[in-house]
Image 1 (cartoon, rainbow, N blue to C red):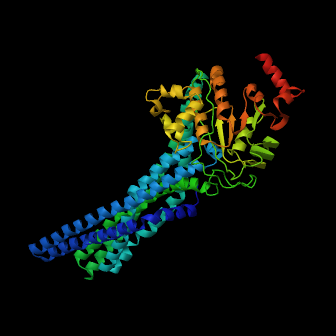
Image 2 (image 1 turned 135 degrees about the horizontal axis):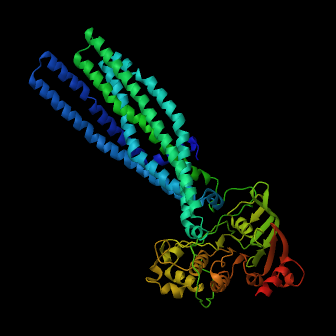
Length: 610
């Protein structure tokens, strides 16, 4: 959540390009309001003409003035409201773009911790609330405030005592607004959080529907969604009750003000200080304030909702203010790196294609990638880890005293039992998590992280690949597919590389989805690649294919491989054995298998099983 100061500063930045349009809108609305103020005095004149026996012609002329006043109010008001809404929508469009840009630069650790529902609710519910306020509430509020100010001035022109009488309603209105604002702000903020939690549980349940059904826990997850939904509904009902009490208090203010104006008019007419028509005009002026005052005060409700959503949107942008261009948050524990080099004209590394092998498994994949900083000159080490420690929660250490240096072009495999810290080490080096102790430096440049849960983006297959390199030519895209043995089946798709894949499109197998991820890796062409069990989800036959694909995709790169098959470790230059978050063995495959130790034990057990 952004602070009020941060939100105001962001609004000022967004308002800059729209100042001329907003100024023109306000000028038109002022002109419309002034034109509308002639109606009560003209109606009062008709009352005076009728009570004093005025001519029919005078009444007709006054009626023509009423029609002219109505047109003079409607035309500029229409244009003014349109201009104001256009300016507000343009500001909202820029804010949405900034939100998406900032969300894509957030540290992945923070995104994972918040959950998909939080970001989804911000970009849907919160944006919708702000859009509604920009489209309707802002023009209405501007008109209402102008009408209130100029109407009160008109009452003072009739007689200053009418203005004093009208102000009787102000204390009740001020108290009502302050009472409401104190309660509405926290309530709407809590409601937004509850909706985000409900969406997070709903999306997680839908995404994991197969697993939920397989374990027969549908009722349990349904109850969780229902509980979160009920919490959101309860908060909504509390907001409705609060609004009802708010409007009831406003009606008390209207009664008090109108009674005061009518009483004042009675005594002024009896004292011959004003005419009946003037008293009528004053009463109509105040009665005409009912709607704009109620609109202005009621829009406090919309403003609370929009402000809550705006604080959440601006808050995402504020989170990335201290984030580097690579997406890493500033951290004193991570070694400084020089600016990234330009990769726009870099060609994929030469890769020899391997024979394709059919894949048999299928899944619903997801992907993660992260870019770090690169150096302008060839470094002596591609990755340097010193005294690394990490804990997801304070007091629960996952990694301790990790020291590791990986040379350029070297391939290092990480093995260990489940829970040893392999994936955590990979994510810390990739920049998904920040170390809680020690430093991680990647002087070689960009880092790409490829996991077993890859994602197929919705859209044409070629555009899915170009996400890694937008300027890639058709030949480069085909070369990347050929390098990962995917070109043959890609050409056989209904529309070739133009075939729609991902959600709602052609379904790919788990192995094919992983091949696309490796092709994106080739197009991105990072000097350092981290594979976190990237071949584990494709089944035995698919895994053998993907191991060969990975071998080709990693050619010429520095690689850290979290191995789920010891064949990957055997082909690596060095093997790191983790146990309880510490390096317990390190060396080449030949060295580690030639002496007693944890890796030799693993290799012996695995070889016997094979």
